[in-house]
Image 1 (cartoon, protein in one colour):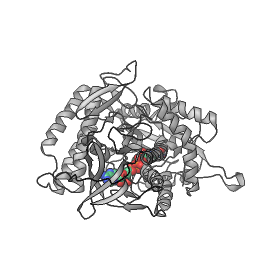
Image 2 (spheres, helix red, strand yellow):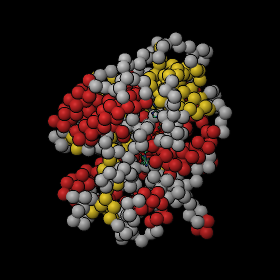
Image 3 (spheres, helix red, strand yellow):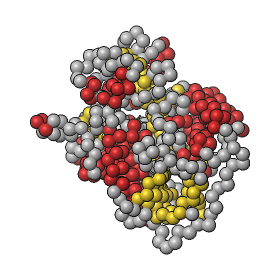
Length: 516
Ligand SMILES: Cc1cc2nc3c(=O)[nH]c(=O)nc-3n(C[C@H](O)[C@H](O)[C@H](O)COP(=O)(O)OP(=O)(O)OC[C@H]3O[C@@H](n4cnc5c(N)ncnc54)[C@H](O)[C@@H]3O)c2cc1C
């Protein structure tokens, strides 16, 4: 049994941003499933949206966030995001994050780009298209200098420990397969999204929704799980990974063209290629029924290799070049708007448990996230959650006699577990993906029931993830079936219209409710 003041599950932008603050008052253990650098944060390309141009800029950022969220954004959370964002980004700059700047001869100002549904160019980027990596590296550099923070890699949290209704720690599976029990005065879930629940995703392997599944099992409320953002443009070639082709490509002028070489976005939205993501993703899916869809930058005169070095390097592996070739693209699961339900201070419905970043749902993105708002979300709400944890930390001994949850009986093989996971991911892509209806969602539900019979058993990472993916898939399907309307990223062919009033779905212990 190990004891820390605070346990932070996840080392992405939300977890690290929180840990830095928590370390001011106590000991902090940060656990992460793989190497510290492996998180969704590290893969972020386009940038971080932040209104650093004064009050008007902040007000416009708020309006853009509200509009993208399609009537479901929590205005209080969005106001906190856009108004506290500039201060948090200044801190990042102080900690050494090197965002791209104009040459010194031209004033050395921070460069800003624009992405879909932003009314202004307000997105800071680093090393062209490697913003997340630069942020992760600079945060980790800073965190490593703080003695009160212990970093534990290759460690998977399995279950939360709850005693007397309060979360008092978690059980962890270390790199050698050993079970560890960690007690803490407060626990922060900063475990990121769940893109791996779909066969087609831009998310890395660590994104299996573990934190959400753990919180739900422990009795916490989970909200808006039907809202999965499908990024319109992930690379599309047989056998190739669904590598993200950043929205910044369209921000820099890329057109979308169909198999006939026609630009088609004017038929779908007045903002054309920079329309909200859900609109662009659906348009590509519909146009893609008649053949491939491409990003076309052949008319763009900027130095695209310099602006997008990471994407250019990836494409070179397929003998493709931005500005010279048509680049095949189609949607992939990208960002979960839903998650563990929290208030803007990061409190979940369980005492002792807090959540921030993609694992959490403050309602800040509503039904559809505005591009590049999620790095900012992790930064702002990670810091806020830490402040709340500090303010509410119980004094005295945090004792727990709770024994870790017993492991399932029996052990599945690695190969059987991989096959089972692949089946679940295909099922979700086919029936609970971008275009949904009751028949398909019921098929998904039946498929999940059938998979539950052969649920992978045992205490090894992939079996733990398999069970979590199943829990997250069920939450998505049940919430999607319950939402009989189309809104933001959730599109129902059988209910194409909006309800008059936007409501959030909330699930707790098998019950689904819709609340204002
Ligand atoms: C390809 C790609 C490009 C993107 N581009 C942008 C962009 O340009 N701008 C933007 O704003 N957003 C972008 N996003 C989204 C953004 O990167 C994420 O939403 C954000 O980084 C999430 O941060 P986080 O700290 O909440 O989670 P993450 O960064 O995903 O970190 C989660 C952490 O939790 C750990 N973890 C998970 N489960 C467990 C467990 N059971 N036990 C222990 N540790 C666990 C993981 O190992 C990881 O360390 C992009 C996402 C992807 C995938």
